[in-house]
Amino acid sequence: MRRLIFASLALVFAACSHVAYHDDSCRPTWNYEQQVEWPDACKDGPDRSPINISTTTSAGAPQIDIQYTSFFPQMYNNERGVKLYANNGGGSVRVTYANGQSKVFTLQELHFHVPGEHTFDGALPRRAPMELHLVNQDAAGNAKVVVAILFDDTTTAVNPGLSEIIPILPTQTCRYITSSTRVNPVKLLPDPSEYRSYYYNGALTTPPCGGGLEFFVFVSRAMTNPTQIQGIARVTPGPNAKTIGVRELPGIPVVPVVRPR
Image: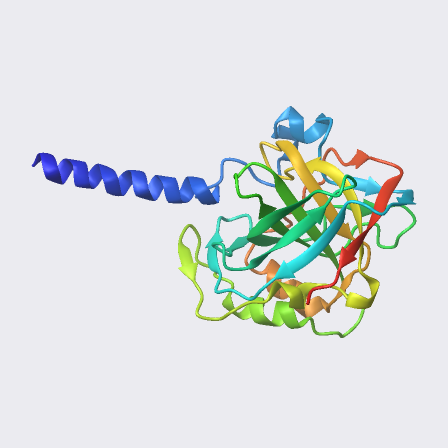
């Protein structure tokens, strides 16, 4: 009996650690319709994200080198969207800083926000119809780098990366599903001839909105069409973008992006 109890507890702890590692929660305790009830850090935290990009400056560093590879995603629909976990199989990014030192961040997961979260002065529309976040983490599990891609749906263009993802997105919630279809993050990126990004220090765009993240927001937008946007949005109950506490941060550095090889 004692062995059975310990075996049962081990299974429970293993399941809990799996969920905690992926930072998922079934039956969410917060939602996008009631953002006014989110923690104060989401509304007025000093490093909060997203930001409004109004003015920019040119900078040579930091520089980000995209080294993503295709992977079989483990997907989880948490009723606010679907996360596609790479489980250390999706490659990485290398960030080189102004002092010459560089650091590798492994792709952890990617997810979409419909509509986009970052806003732009003088741009129409001010908010993109969709935004992709590729979340990368260092080997120690502490620092995170978010590569943000905004989409343009004003044409009939078909995004090859979205074409891989849309058919496999699960509508079933609160369950991990591993796909037998590979997805390639590089196919989601904009035209490689225009690789530059806005760079700033920010925070999670979901509660608890903790800081310590580096954001690389691509200047160019990835091309898609309204049908593909709807294909991503169909697995969420409604808009899943943070709209409160958008931070004004003028003079954003525009930094180089090394093209994927």
